[in-house]
Length: 485
Image 1 (tube, rainbow, N blue to C red):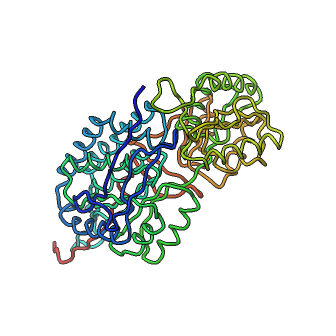
Image 2 (tube, helix red, strand yellow):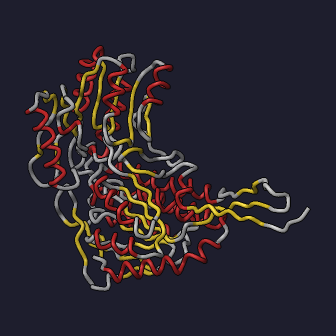
Image 3 (tube, one colour):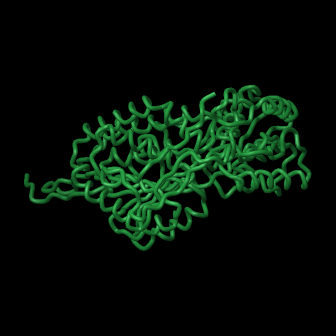
């Protein structure tokens, strides 16, 4: 058994210096599996945020003027350093976030992949020479960095969600201020130490930790030097940020809530489908924006899928993420446990059948038993709200047309999944589902080389893939006259 991290003391990163908050205040970071302290970080105030923005603004001209090849080398070096430090970062992540150590190590590699991928994209920010309408003119199109950016990152993937934003920002020639979730700031600091150690100039990346997310957001949105903000979090907060962006017409990238349908057709490979469902639903104890929240199984295979799923879920091991064999760690806090329990009790009260789990695990830590419910209906909370916990609700359906309709009825449109061995159906259903990301015959969909993002109330903008860097670039058109013939 690995020993959970303790005594991890981190600081703010402002202008290349690791410093305390101006007030001297700090706050503890706790292990959700035990409630014990993991370490502490500074509790930044307004002056600290302003200093970080000033540092990013001061570093901008030098960084964007640096040849793309040199920015790419720094990003690749940072990716290498993150991988070299995998074990240390993963242990801290498990200790402050809860996910099993193997999952945390996987996330560290995933985080590194964004820096590596966008190192390549940095070298391919091409412009255009457009055929002129007038023979005495020339038309040039440039793509230039938007300027100072900010990244507001979530607690569920504290390493990867940060590099998914910093990678394209740095590659494009932008500088950044990062505000990680107050529950998981230690992982963020370790990632930024690797980026700094790779040779990143002072001020290009800056770290602000604070318990006052509203204060930090207000500073970022009111400062005209910050031209673009990327946020991963709830739809409700995303809507507030959209309103806040209006005063200065700031650019936003928003990855917001999800409520993914997971559809299993009767011609599916059932073992593959159940394994995919488990990978999607129970990874990180169900605390992902793209995890399956509504599972629809066609009537012909419904009983078989419920039985196969229940058998596998029963064997899941719940415990501290550092313990050998653990597959389900704690939820992030007691409020998350309350929500999962509320969804389960509501479903049972309205007629769903509890197949597996369905209870809090008493003792220290925020644990909830991996749960399967069958006979779930559209009126239940689990059918309309993100559970963000290890609870799978199964609904029977009859026809393809029916399941596409109910899958698309959600206000969310981040991710959707389905399993079929019918090639024509695969294409047809993928085209009809109103989601930004589709998993066809797989439950794992995230990758650095693919565009990640949603539609409807799941946000806008894309992270990852060849289009991810576009979010950090302005397009400039130059009309050159007097060229002559």
